[in-house]
Length: 465
Image (cartoon, rainbow, N blue to C red; front, side, top):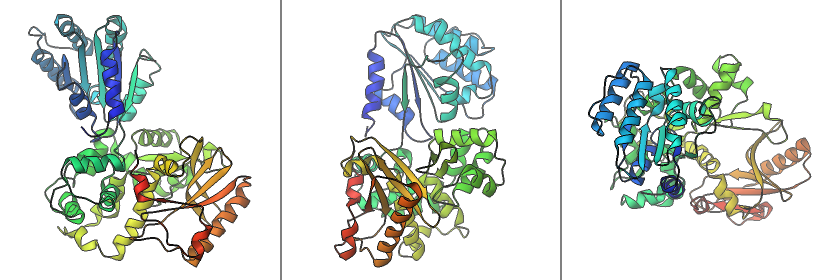
């Protein structure tokens, strides 16, 4: 198993505990939650069950009963409600001879989304019985991150502070994708890995479709445009698996996809044609919890002026290209490779890649141990997509530029950065030193304008753990 060292360590620590433990594992669809849990415990569980997408209460209970019987409780009556279901689970655990009873319920949100009593039954099972024992490891998991967080992890009711281990599973970093590619025998340069990341993000399941012997462009054609259904329907599946009414969220995603730098609530509501109310607040929060949107305050402004930015690579690629292949061209991406459209896209996607690896950028700047905040900033006539505000009296003003060699800073670039820097200092009134930082794949070319740059971060730096 590639990566996931900390997450696996937490699961094994919970297993080794002398007390019963309640573990919640959450993260977006296809990020590898189920694989992590199964691999960690070598596919051996006292009880394992997965919810059924769009299954009604009777179907869910019937399938839960079949799982109970399959795991050894031969006399299990028909389950009328979720209290009956967890009573049957108690009976199964009580008769088990396993030293540590590992209970794994996958896709729990699908079990509880249509039945308000489900969470109450979980509360009764854990608070009234399992937590009083010393041998139960109760693991719940789900792709609908907002449900897991609201109903289980951050519950204000009976499960308040009951989860003992919280394991958010995040997409792979560039380095983890590199290790995964190596494990699959894929011969790829770091530049090629970066381009795949710009399309697929760090979602292991998507990387699983990469084929040996094909170029990056050929692989993307195979996944998105060849008509064999690998990822062509993934967009609809992705959002419908997370939200019971996905269209309301897709409208927000569609609006945010129109502006790479993000939008305030007011701008978003106006663009999407939706009300700026509590429903928008809740949906933005859920999209952020699921990892599709990031919300950040612009430096020097209050939190209520937060900017919301679409951050999911797969979604961005879908909007820009996959949904635009109206003629069904099976070689759409291969034909784009040397085009102006491709070069424009890769420039924007590289900026996105950098924003997803801010921690690696900080390490490259040797400020990993310095307290920092990452911001964006929009002035009257310019904007900066990444500012690193440091507690040591410096602000790094980051300019992200994609180039297939050392980037030659031009007079136009230099003038632009000078203007941004001056406007930023004037409008924010900062008393900190402002350092111009270029982030480029292969460094910057030495010329008179490069002397105005205090630091340069390169693609190899983004591959650090």
